[in-house]
Length: 130
Image (cartoon, rainbow, N blue to C red):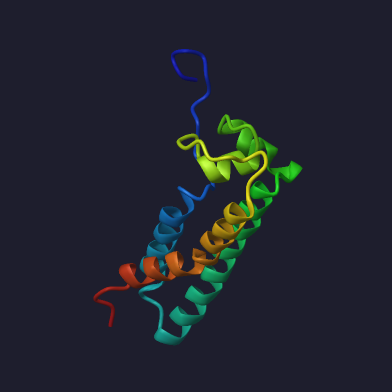
């Protein structure tokens, strides 16, 4: 509990937070798997990447579509809805109740970058690897 009686907010899954979390997950994956043989390392990184990005996509898309199972996340983050959390992250004020086609297209484009952020993290974590 915070001094004012509120619970601390734990940010989770939004367009603002996902890229750095995916990058960090990729970096950690590279560090954890660096002592494996190259063949096992490649397989492990691929599996961890697919799993991690899949979980992020499932959660992010569900939040964006205001799926009921994600309600606990957006309520914990004090957002009006999952889409409000995904678009605004408690920082911005983009239209989330009736977003334009442009907003949907940009959101889909952001989601399409998720594997790239994970891969960039793996590359950064694998520097100076044999």
